[in-house]
Length: 449
Image 1 (cartoon, one colour):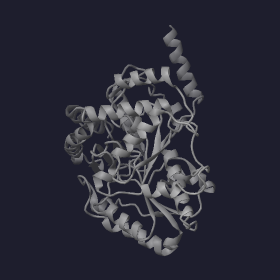
Image 2 (image 1 turned 90 degrees about the vertical axis):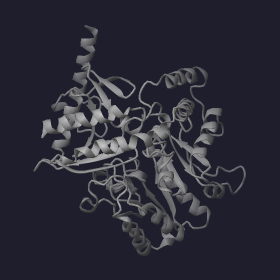
Image 3 (image 1 turned 60 degrees about the horizontal axis):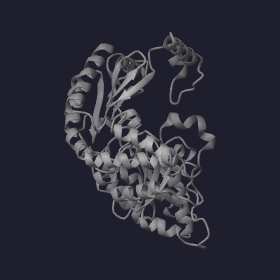
Image 4 (image 1 turned 180 degrees about the vertical axis):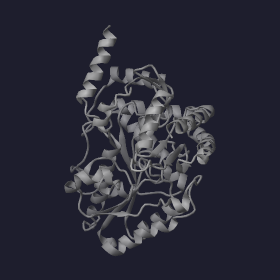
């Protein structure tokens, strides 16, 4: 009876909107009370309040590559809570933060040896933008204030990240609060030239030249940084054309512009390398990270910077704070403890190499859906994939929503944004689980039409 009462209370509160859910069509949710409450998770699966076991096709929100309830992580949380549950990192520190920063720097591209901790991807991006502005100011180039983002880019929901981001629906309501001096590169996705590409498309490298246009328009002396995701995740897994990121690097170097890679999704193994920078052979000046660093268990994010950037800040009076920025929970002991275990498990279980092994499995499976008439495009790289569906006439997003609901009833937790479905399964998935995921998906697509 107590459980029934609790379930009734949850449903009532959901209907009344007591919990205002993020990135959710709240009115639609309340009008269509399909079971949506997750009550437990283990391995690569969630369990809903109705008792349905659903495969986690996007690792939570790109953040749980080790799956759920990993016993070593559970034990690390318990042990750390008993030992040092919180420690301020303003003028103080603790061993976990120091050693985790060192380990992350060891995984990063050569020459990127300094880590500043935040608590999310959004905070990491705003931190990176501040680092870029501060760096140029210290160098005597305070006139470099402009930031260049990219259309369809997602860099979190802080005002800085939202300003350099290029997803229209995330921006239009908040235009009055946008940063000044921000411009955007054209995105690289043109389905007529690259639909159903496996891996990196060969068309589109020339889109990097759009940065030359912006440099000419604004003058390089006013531009502080360019920020891009190596693979654009939240907009539906947009893979960079061959040579595109290399050309951005060349243009930035030639014009004294910092290059920021937002690796909140691609960092820590998702591309089959430690970072997307290594997968694509391009070293930026700043990397942002979050999500997988703690397997989503305790929020953590951060930035990694080059020796040049760090050493530039280490100037001025020795008793002065060089970078007036930080968060109450920067380098939180609980997050640091989990981060250590995540890196241990990834190394000991060879999970980055496992991503490379699973990549062709996911690629072959997901592209097997090409014959379905309702599919407009399929793309993939690393342990990620995206599918675009042809929208129902006059009802954009309806097909994606129907697929999401059907997935919950039939063993798949899908990430549908409009009529696009993104995939980023846990690294611990088996090859058969990936094939079963796609097999079930085929049945659901056929079912919803």
